[in-house]
Length: 117
Image (cartoon, rainbow, N blue to C red; front, side, top):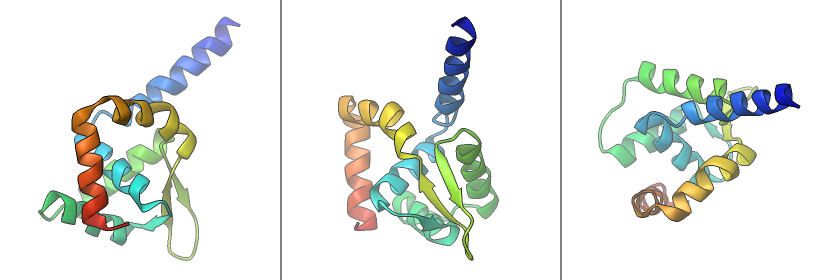
């Protein structure tokens, strides 16, 4: 029983660590609003459009890798790799935060308007 509980706690803390950077949170919110798998270049364009500035490709790659490692994003190995949000993890971790936080609600709404999906 204690081993299972410890395993679950490790999983949750790993997922939460993925949320510890503003850019990663921005990436997740963009992916949530897309409601479909996205390519790296499409994601880069959406992030830059939302932030209103260019983003270093290495920075985006680093944060996307971190989101994959934490289980918040899933990489689909197609001809051109695509990325999709892990809906189970999102519902468990982010949905309650967005619903109860005015700042996240307004950011999520702004992202939705900017990416137009």
